[in-house]
Image (cartoon, rainbow, N blue to C red; front, side, top):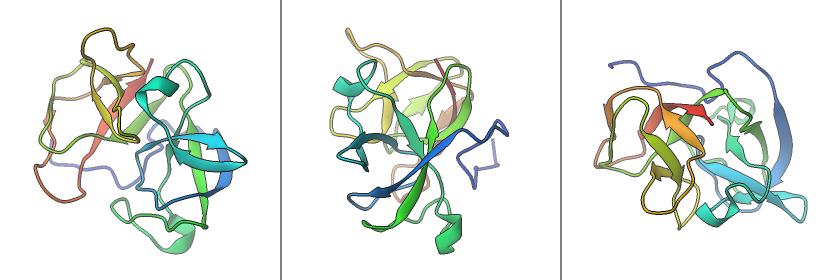
Length: 143
């Protein structure tokens, strides 16, 4: 697939929460709310707290590969069932359509399910994530 998403919300729904981010956040990463601010979510958060996917900082003039600075407002797309979102994966990973995805242990990015991890989304395309740079947005369907 040659097209790379320039936005996170791919399903046309506007189901968001707006908060200040506690740290720099890349669009397409998983978030949770702690003390009223968005912070990176990790694998242990799946199924325990509401999860969101960081939207692009359009109001700040930022693009899909530009981090939103700590302290700025950020829109988090609700990870509701059957939503189609662009999510950020781990560099160099190979995703195949319908592969189960979960959150990485270190936070924010999505990775292939392994072991006892529960899926939070499913890959919607065959895609090899670039080995370098920030251009790692790929299509996913939320579980």
